[in-house]
Length: 246
Image 1 (tube, one colour):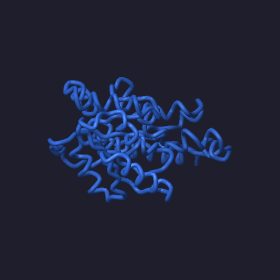
Image 2 (tube, one colour; image 1 turned 90 degrees about the vertical axis):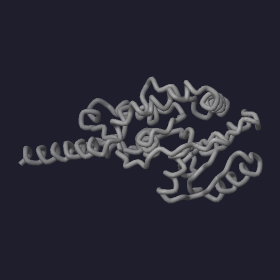
Image 3 (tube, rainbow, N blue to C red; image 1 turned 60 degrees about the vertical axis):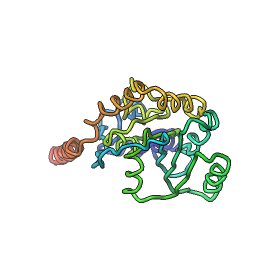
Image 4 (spheres, helix red, strand yellow; image 1 turned 90 degrees about the horizontal axis):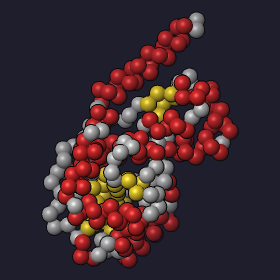
């Protein structure tokens, strides 16, 4: 189940809710997803983290503090929150935001171009293939994920796998991947709070190290062997159920 499944569709769509009752098993991508389901649905739901094959961490640039945002420009991603945060940071900070992702409407593309005109520290690079996006991520000081809803964003798993600190909106999908006690959350839609965390990440090496340590602690989630084992277990349950029903 994706973020729109968990945090929108099953709340408003009777057919979406009925599909959960019809399913033999349900998969969510992080444990907070279980909170959106009733007791009967939770009993047949399995948490399976998405694994990654991550590139190696690269040295971040020395002349500026690089922040990446990786995700398509659509409403659920709150895509311009990091760009808006720059207005609350001094021009002398040397902080740069690079955004990779396809504009899902012409209006979003216009807004991205307008943001670059107003804020020279923000660059929208448009759609990028996976390898290019990972190169940007691997050399970032931090990654920002600003979504208003997430089922369990794969780019967060990729940041975990590489070891890039994450600053995240405090939505269940992000918290489910990074943990309840991860220090890098800000309230959804609050660019001033996001700006404060970006300034702290840039200026407080110990706090930035704490973000990196928090990410490293979650690497067990993104191990391909763990995902294979979880999927094999799920299929084994379904096969056993089918045999038992004959």
